[in-house]
Amino acid sequence: MTFSFRRSDFPDGFQFGAATAAYQIEGSSFGGAGPSHWDTFAATPGNVVNAETGAIACDHYHRYEEDLDLIRDGGFDAYRFSTSWARIMPDGTNVNVEGLDFYDRLTDAILERGLKPYLTLYHWDLPAALSDFGGWRNRDVANWFADYARTVFARIGDRMETVATINEPWCVAWLSHFLGIHAPGLRDIRAAARAMHHVLLAHGRAVEALRAEGCDKLGIVLNFEHANPASDAPEDVAAARRQDGHYNRWFIQAITQKSYPEDILEGLGDHMPQGYEADLETIGTPIDWLGVNYYTRSNIAHDPDSVWPSIKAVPGPLPTTDMGWEIYPDGLHAILTRLHRDYTKDTPIIVTENGMAWDDHVENGRVDDAIRVDYFDAHMKAVLRAIADGAPVQGYFGWSLLDNYEWAQGYAKRFGMVHVDYETQKRTPKASYEAFRHAIGGN
Image 1 (tube, rainbow, N blue to C red):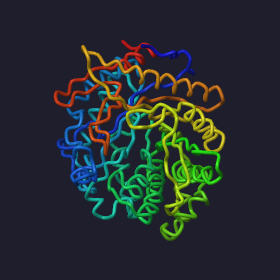
Image 2 (cartoon, rainbow, N blue to C red):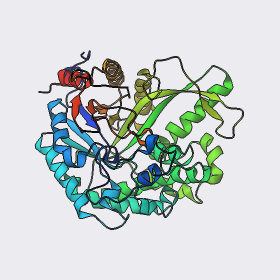
Image 3 (cartoon, rainbow, N blue to C red):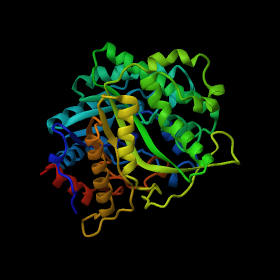
């Protein structure tokens, strides 16, 4: 099983990488890490499949050299990883030197293998101690996060290829405070409105703080989902527009245009923090690059039986992944070209996550994930089309290097290019890993 593209099809300097996140792979029960709100969320019955946690995960904390060897041997250029806020500041304030030492060793090991480190400062593991004070609902979180960002940057920032502030603010805010699916598991529009603003303010404050330290490689990672009207009916078209508004436009418009979409403020405005408008200048502090995470599209219908935003997702006609997400590579092309045209202009774009879950199994020492090979191939071709259409896409990171802790799904869903046996921690590269190795030139 091979891809239809080769490294030579992409512009010179295009970066191929693999991505992970700290809580999903490292193991949170050692190395001096404190509890995060994911630990407490998972300890609450009914929140996570099988009540599973990231306590051990893939034990990357102890096995990182083996995992980095896989990235190097797969021919990848770069590794996107996150630092754990709860590991570095277990009580939300004081620094755990053991945690910083780990990321120092990890950085050295990345560079020793000729890989470029792409850092994400926050991938959802808020210290539980800060959750006690309201977490993302509390305006002070912006200053807490800026302090944390300075701490990490002072130790490893000079060796990073890029630094992203926050991964997927929509998940941090809406999915977690309005839909209640992720930690802290709230379903409260006031909490959601505040989190939707404070997560962006935290990004802006961190950018200001790291700019003052001389950092010129700052970005943010936003997730985008192609919002497709379930029908041509005007009410469904309007519903899809609202989905696009809170999911896509809210964050990119604030960052690039220093404003929020008026149609979404119609629903959130009464619940926003007083005087939020004054923060938009900070939120719009220029970035050096934009990270784009893309997985699927949603088919959206108007829901007349619910309050704002009065939307519901309905099944679509396309094949789906093990998460039930439609496979729609044209959506990635549409998002990349739209961002370039309407928002980011010539700001470099990096596809920081793209991948799929499947019910993978090791058979005779192999994992033949042909459907994932096809998924990656189709989405990489969508990236090539976007580049041909003028989008300044400079890299692509497959999600994920390893099967890992898939948040509220526990260990039930496998996204990895490398299979992980969670009982033995044995790593088995899948056919998709081999396809990348063949296409981009690994050992």
